[in-house]
Structures are given as C-alpha cells and as structure tokens.
Image (cartoon, rainbow, N blue to C red; front, top):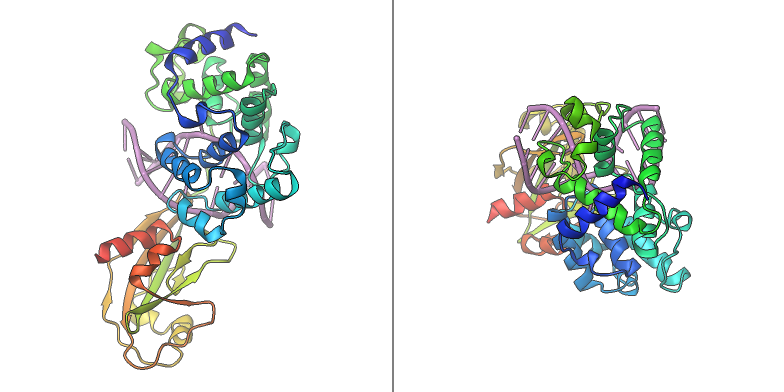
Amino acid sequence: MSNISEIIAEWYVHNKRELPWRKTKFPYCIWLSEIILQQTRINQGLKYYLKFIDQYPDVHMLASADLDDVLKIWQGLGYYTRARNMHETARVIANQFGGSFPSSYKELLNLKGIGKYTAAAIASIAFGEPVPVVDGNVYRILARVFGEHTPVNTSEGESVFRKLAEHILDYRNPGQHNQALMELGSLICRPKKPLCHDCPLAQYCRAKHSGLIPDLPVKIPKKASRNRYFNYLVFMHHEKTYICKRNSNDIWHSLYEFPMIETSEPLNIKQLVKHKEWESLMSGSAYQIRNISGIYHHKLTHQNIYARFIDIPVNGEAPYLEKHFISVTLDSIVQYAVPRLIERYLQDLK
DNA sequence: AAACCGGGGTC
DNA sequence: GACCCAGGTTT
C-alpha cells in the first residue's frame, strides 16, 4: 500500500458523501449505479437511481420489464444505449446466470454496457478484486499529482495512466480505494478551481508545485459539432396526432418523436413544402399550416440541432402515414419515452 | 485510432 | 459560448 493511497483512504473516511449505493454490496445496486453514473454527475443520476431501485428492486424485476418502460424511466438522462444495454444485460443475468452477476473483472467485461471502467468498479467494489478504476476523476488526479502530460484521450494515455493507477492501488481494500480516488477527484481535485487548500495530497502534487494545475490533464480536442435541422410535423386530426419510434443508427435510438423532415441546411417554409419528403408525408393532400413554432436550439456534445414544430390541422380524412406511426392524443405522449427536445415542446404547449 | 452517442452544470 | 463529466460501442 503506497503512502498516497493511505492518505486518500484516511481522507475518504472523513469526507465521503452518504450515497445509497455506498450502503450496499449488492452487485445489482453497484452495477445499476455505475451504469447510470457513466458520463453523468451524481446530482443528476441520483434521482434516476432511486427511481430504478424503487421500480425494479432486483435484477429479475428489471429483466422482466418492458424495454419501453425502462426507457421511459431513463428519459432525460441521455446516452440511451445505456438503458438498452442495461436491460439486455439484466436479462442475461436473470436467464443465463441464475440472477447472479459474474464476480471477476474479466467476466464482467463480456456483458453489454460494461467496459473497462465499469468492470473494474463492480469487481473492486462488490467483489474486492484488486483492479484499478481509471475514469475522468482518476485521470485528473494522476495527471496532476504525477505531473503527467501524456494526453488522456489516446491509447498511450490509457496505458500510462492505468500503470500509474495500478502503482497506487490499495490491494487490500481496492473498492474503497477506487471510490476514494474518484470522490477526491469529484470534490477536491475538480476540473476548474480545484480546492488544493483542502487537498490531502497537496504536498505530493507535482502540478501544484510547478503551477501547472490549469494545464493538466492534457486532452486532444474533439471534432467540431455539426448542424442539423429538424422539421417536425404535428398533425392534429380529431384530437389525435402521430408519433414514431426512432430506429436508425443515430441519436435517440428507441425514443419517440413526431414525423420529421431533416435537412442539412436551414430551409424556409416555401422551400420545405417543395421538399421530396414533404410531398411523401402529405401524400398529395393540401393541408393548411396553422402555426410554426420558434426555433428550438438543442445542443448535444457533438451536434447542434435546430428544430421547429409545424402545426397542421387535418379536417377530412386522416393523413396517410406509414404503418409504424402511432396515433395518439397529445396528453398520452407522456407515456412514451421522448427526447428532451420533444418534452420541452410539449411543456411549452401548456 | 477515431467517430459517435445526451444532457445538465459551471464558469 | 466553451468546457466538463463516476465511458462504451461501433467503424
């Protein structure tokens, strides 16, 4: 056990937050919390964790749930593939593993939605296997404490920081050690304005001694965002409108939305009604446009979405749409999992 | 190795 | 507006 891990452990015991998944060793609870907390802050993920534990107290309950219901609870949390993988893994655990999670890092890696970080977290926290977690917090602490300038988001960085993490691992208590490291990164060694004054490692921190805290960790910049223009068609036919499940290999997989025409450039309405897909969706009928919403700018990490909602009353026959569209009242859309963008529009209607 | 996948918080 | 986050999967 290194000097550093001893200091961190002491700090953790006195400064850790009380969180529901820290009161249990049930692998199901550890797993659920780790999936939810991938790329997600505790403040945002906590209420989702409580909802899932309440609705699905064990892996069998989750396994027997309907995927659409799982997605509905997940709604608003983002990265929706996590929910689909989590559901599938629950079914594998229930049906092929007799309800028990595999207990080793290597076996955990075979499950969907569980990569190196999550496998190490579950293996160490739930089963005491001495494997280090390397997440954003750990990258940050190690880069600063050891003054390590290798970019973290490269394969070389992954290897360099994994070795550092193994070097300071507490093999006798890996679960607590890993959580302590991440908690220190979250509360003290923050990305901006770290609280070095309260940091138990300050005297050992090379970045602090050399004034390089703002420069570490080093990251290779990501590609710029692209712009997308979504034109949603809100048909209103006898109190009913139409929604459809997204299935293509794209954002919001398995979530619901209105019929939509996407363009790569902004179009005015005159240009839009000449669009091929407009003709196809209207199937030759000359519907009147009642209202066009303002532009909703929805920002994802890697995309800028500019959306508007076009209100189209239908007086005569129902518009012909493909079979996969569902006819629903506006009020009943709340039963379906929808992107935050759609949720915001529905809230604005009220 | 690089691109892709959400959303909210912070400064 | 830019940056960040308790990462994983696909190409």
